[in-house]
Structure formats: structure tokens, C-alpha cells
Image 1 (cartoon, rainbow, N blue to C red):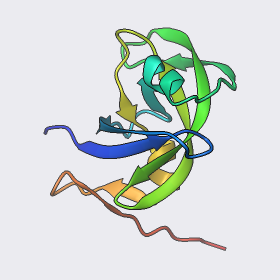
Image 2 (image 1 turned 45 degrees about the horizontal axis):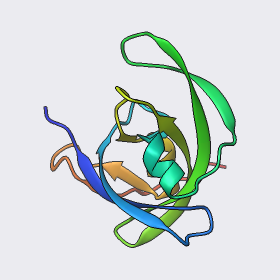
Image 3 (image 1 turned 60 degrees about the vertical axis):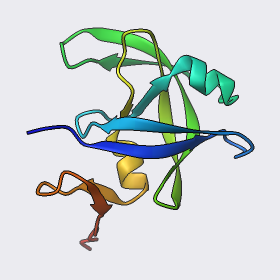
Length: 119
């Protein structure tokens, strides 16, 4: 089946600092996980801690914050988890939806999503 990767840029909340990263797209992960040392380097502050269940069934507690993420010239604010050693770095669904992106099942690449509003 294969994995989808995306080259994104993560910005500090005030957009004064940034870092380009290649993250695996994980539609099973609610939030984006980035190494804590990278987020600290960008000056992204902690908003608290949250519990998360990992794919192997373990529950962990991690620090979280907010950052601006950019893909293909589009920017959006998203929740980021401060990934610890051994944690994967992934681009999660919250960021994908904020950027209005989805994974094309044929090409395995990100593409613009069309969202509908049912009233």
C-alpha cells in the first residue's frame, strides 16, 4: 500500500521562525506530532498536556501547543504534539482538514479537498 509523505513548513505562532520537515501523513492521527526539540527551537510554547492512545494500544501523555503549518503555499494553524524519542513525526488529520487537503487514494499524494456543507 505504501505511505504518503508531505514536505511542510512549521512556523512559530508569530511566524518569525520556521523549519521545513518531511512528515508521514497519518489519517489515523488526530494531531500532528513533531519532535519536541524542533518545536522548542521554534519557540512554540506549551498549552498543556493531553493523553493520546498510540497505534499499539499504549496511552501516553504528551505536551501540546499550536503552530502554523504550510503546504504548497497554503497556511493554517494546527495543534502540534511535542513528540518524544521513539514517537513518530506525522502530519495529522487536524492539519489536513485545516489546510483543506486529503490523500488521493490512487496517486498517494495530497490534493485539495472539496468539503460540502449540508444544511
